[in-house]
Image (cartoon, rainbow over all chains, first blue to last red; front, top):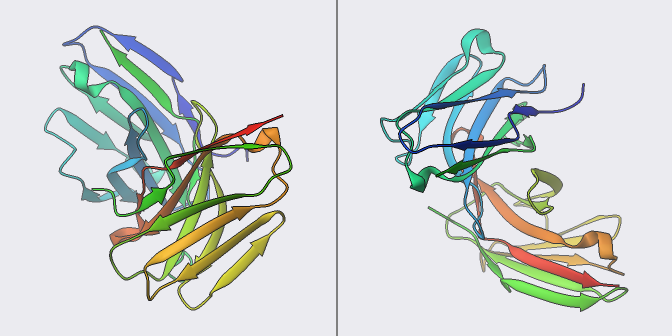
Length: 115
Length: 110
């Protein structure tokens, strides 16, 4: 297993366009998380899935954001009608819950630039 | 919202010196984790310390946890240029999602 992979690594889009990012977690991990990180800040939680169920969404996740994890495997994060404020690094992580302790494995991230 | 706060925000040291970073958090936790992030990359898990532990070692890393003060520290001994990165503390919240601090940017000069 090569770890968590994200695609694309970089995305430049014009304001108003829709973008979709993909995350492939570590295969045996049942939980998948999306975070957003802006320059100089720590990652901020957006949403997470346990298997295919989306269990929690942050208030940061506006109506323009939607995430899916069909069949409990890979996940996609779509941003509709992008705005300049959406420019950030979008990080995906996966974990295998174990006795209340969770070590999250992160992908390399997708850097989104909205121009 | 950010639960943890790292201190200092930035730290510059010479190779071979020790680096100490501190983290404070607000709510009760059952563990605290430290992550490293190289510029423009994803985060790498370094170490997890449970709430009933006071100190933990992993190679050149030493982590302490003081639950009475809601604080933790990360010590990197004998630093190397390759240790240059941002370091974040993280605490688990509901659903095992992590709440991160703003990080300490460590620069190790050769």
